[in-house]
Image (cartoon, rainbow, N blue to C red; front, side, top):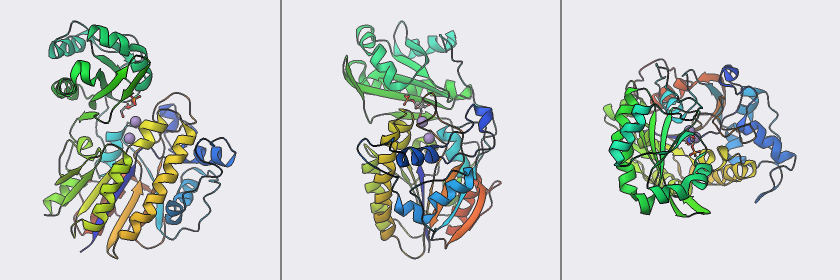
Length: 398
Ligand SMILES: O=P(O)(O)O[C@H]1O[C@H](CO)[C@@H](O)[C@H]1O
Ligand SMILES: [Mn+2]
Ligand SMILES: [Mn+2]
């Protein structure tokens, strides 16, 4: 029986979204602009020269970017041996839940609630609820911010007052940063968990705990981030597979993103290297007929939001080397799909996600292009490979 591995490279978009302009993201292209910067010698920190991702390129990565957006992709010159194309999203959001749910066959039928880019950003009654749940007299932040910048700016005041730092972004999120040892990690996680139902009722996608450690001038976020996401609106690929009596493995953030629905086994790790160790092990050991669904988040959190072009390129090159070793572990009936959930162009203005198409490159599904498809078709294709009935609007491209 076949196995399937669906691997999301978080934020590794490839431009070309027909509605990018409506998101203020016209011309954004995460992979296209990284490849151009590398080829022009503008991404030389800790690496050098044209972007080198031979394993993903052999599956069709460069070709997928050219198809999606028309970008040249210097350095990615392989004639693809894999099955490849690019996918377009329809959900009215460019965040992680929208992207993953749609990849898993379920577009988002509602409009997300976003907080305005004003100070304060949050309504008084919501702030009052945070204060009640946390047992504090006030909050810090109450604005749009980048998570590393706001702990640098307000971390010392947080230590002094004990008030949690609350902030949001262009995504439908309510984020709370607090010191792991001073405020307490469990207290922060409980605060987010308790606040989440109220946020979900408002169609705010996630309450996110963003713990940090250190002292003023040297605050660092830890790997203990927790996301409390609204549940998907309908059964997803994970549910379809599980209902069919198969095993599902969730690697990294997948559990949180799917509100822990349809997941048999959760595999977490402190960083992407640890997550790839899980993926390698599952490549060798995952059950016949199983689905492994993995998310690699560091492209997005460490490099996209930080607008670090060289860092993003380094991460792609590191990831690609591990892809080569991973694919060597797979058997003849196995499918591996590498794709993304949205863009986060490190050359673009601001620090937010960017609306883009995403590459879809497959190992174990023969060769050639299936052209442009929808995000939902990825889930339908994985289901088809596993011999499971898909639900919803997706159609298999296999
Ligand atoms: O700047 P940081 O805290 O990493 O926040 C980013 O992470 C959030 C959730 O992934 C996004 O909405 C974006 O705001
Ligand atoms: Mn994401
Ligand atoms: Mn992000």
